[in-house]
Length: 429
View 1 (cartoon, rainbow, N blue to C red):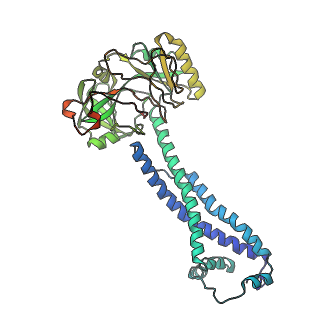
View 2: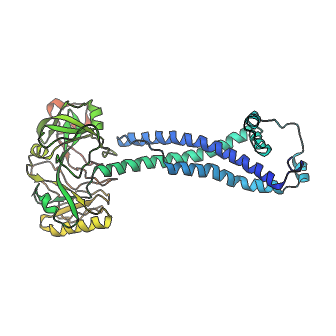
View 3: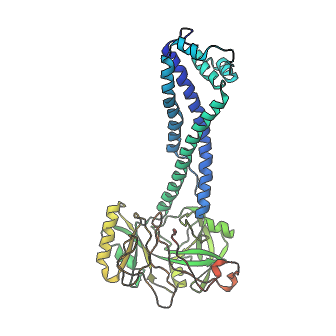
């Protein structure tokens, strides 16, 4: 029709491309909305699998890719029909389709033409949307699905990556070090003499029960430099407060804990009551974990509960340079310098999961550096074999969960089915 009325080839191409652009724009806008909603649902599903709440973050890269896929591909797909239509002679076009009275004016195009004073070519492009509504809906739906898929997957990935990055920011250690021979907590000062080591701290780690729920009990220095808590409320415990603790947000929710509440914690047959002074956001317990959350308490108190006063099972080591090559160099130096103590090491920058090894093993089966066996004590449940490190490289206790005290016993709980329930978890924290 345009050519029959004296229209130029450029006007015909512009009409085709404008129609394609409108399809792409509508499909992209719909797809971005569906993609954001789909990404949120997908992240909730992943969170339920991993027993962790991961905040949703809209990925700017996903939005950009959605726009490129929706609008760009539509224009690209419309280029060939536009070129063919522009080259088609008027006589051939009239012979192929003829002129009929079936053309219906689109109400949308007419309204936009009146309100926005659109050019005739642009108005005609909007009119074309209403000519074959079924085809238009299918086209818009296909574009929307493509844009939604890109945005949903990219947003889910960005949210998980951001959660992992926040976990890394919380744990400031670049490496974990443990020894096959008993060493004191003051050995951290010796580790700080190694070139490149900025800070070293003795930490205690154990499985425990808190008001009937299985938890991970962390013993940290009150003035720790290698754990930066992200407090949701309250504060960190002070050196002169041996009976205070900070709990993770998920544990506070599970047990309905509030600041000032008292929490009974039991491990290795010893129980202690702590007053909750803070709630921290720590999402580093992930896939497959049976733990309800974490309890952070003074290291000296946790060591006393484990009957390990003055003895360190795990050292967190922070370095001056966080580059993987520098971390590997510092780890090698630690291994060589303290070889008589049979050190085991794990770089946080190289996330892997090590297995427990026998006393004759000098390396792990899955790539982490372990030059000696983990510390064991005769007649005691193993509290720290080799630290397992999953997606973020944090140490995980592969040992035995102590039996709950009688007050915590529940015949319906699978956790209480034996004297010791062995945990072989490949989880974080």
